[in-house]
View 1 (cartoon, one colour):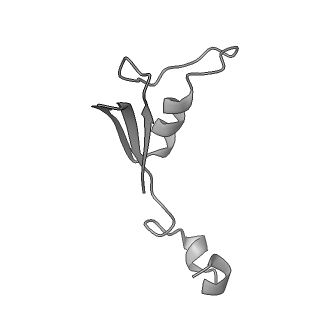
View 2 (cartoon, helix red, strand yellow):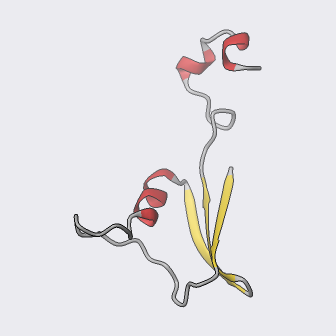
Length: 75
């Protein structure tokens, strides 16, 4: 699955960074980097977008999910 978030106010290309404990911002890209299989940035006329690709259960089924009856997983 591909997720895209655009920040119209971004003036720089976002980069992952370590935040101080007292800061209430700056952790988003660390989380994206940890969970995404690929991610990147794209400047555009509406602002800077960050995109991320993550595996879904359908794309990478676990062994546990494969053993669950179809009516339990919603298929």
